[in-house]
Length: 234
Image 1: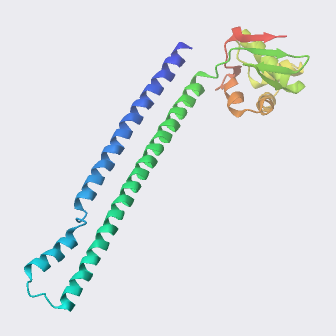
Image 2: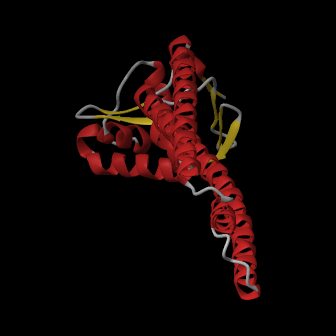
Image 3: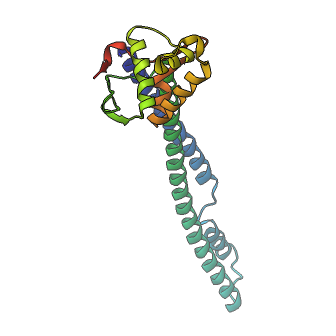
């Protein structure tokens, strides 16, 4: 149990470091992109400055039409300046939005990787069961205070597996069928026991619980992947 807690703590610490490094990298990249973008944008007053230079450098522009034309150019420069300022604001908002999206994606990715790693650890070590109470009369199983209502056949199969686990035995499909049906093991088929295991898993319903609780050991048989000291028969 201590190894599982240590592994979970290491996983969380690693995930936190990855998230922090990723967030710093995202902010640094987008900040650099923003600086380059704003530096290379034209000056908002560049157009007005050019129009002003035309006024200063051309003393001959004294006619009414010329002055009117320069006034139109000045107004156009002011409009250009306002549009460029609004573009800067829009670009800034889009960069903030992109930063938020990238950080959210990074957090979700790290969370998924951590969950997959944790699920792999659970699959390798088996489900952590603190108590398994079987009541044959009521056909009820209490697994970590989760109640499962079983059929008669499923209860008999689980009881056989529980008794075998308390004796540190691994049962083949034929042996399970023999113990449930009362027939000699030589007269029982391996597939019949496998069918009982499948029905038990279907009755438990929760796929993760059923697959990890009833473990299939290759070329040996079936057993409960829990500590025998937590099993109680009532």
